[in-house]
Amino acid sequence: MAHYPHTLSDGLEIRIALKRSAKKNLILRPINAHEISINIPPFLSESRLKKWLDENETLLRKTLARKPAAPDPHEKPGSIWYRGVQTALGEHGAQTIALMPSEILLPQKDWDAQKNHLRHFLTERAAEYLLPRLLRHADAMNLAPTAVGLSNAKTFWGVCRAKTGIRLNWRLIGAPEAVADYVCIHELCHLPHPDHSPRFWAMVHRHTPNTDEAKRWLKANGGALFVLG
Image (cartoon, rainbow, N blue to C red; front, side):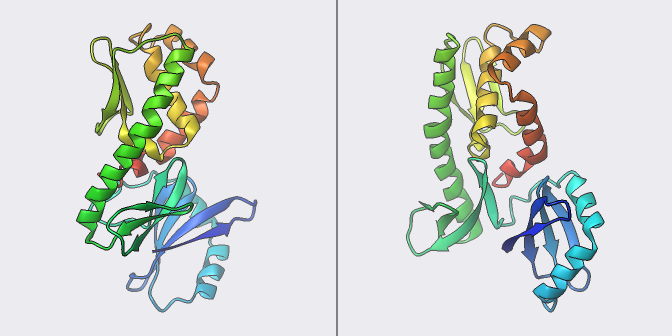
């Protein structure tokens, strides 16, 4: 799958994830608020595609506005979110995963094996990245969770319980720093406020001025963080 940028008439730059397996018609699907997957016939040239994109900006905008379909964990994606950046997936001859500036290189195996390896790799990175971040916020807020850890939850980004502490979804390794900070602080605020009362939200907003932006990012892109299942 090829990825390249496309600029709309108002200067907004979006990403096109291009597949060449369509039989006849172009097939458009939203990936997130800034990226569209387009499946085209193999014979369609890039110049003709560029002309089509320029002439169908309204359709592109409508596609971007649609809710993305849930990612198919059985289909290998061309890229994944990693710390807020859509990072391409490539392959190399080594047996370990290599994290490059703009690419994650996987061992040359079938997708199921690569996916399991990648999930393990990202969970390790999440432990190194998210948990110290959570503890730094806890220290700054003078709060002390009973314990901290990661979860493999399918329905929430974090959970806070008085007896078992705070657990963060490992998939947040894909989110930008500001979004990870929001989730950390959201869960920490549940220590003094185990509800979603006005006092709880006032505390969240006091410690994360970007709360609304972080919630919008998760709404637009959160589904894509589950591409590995």
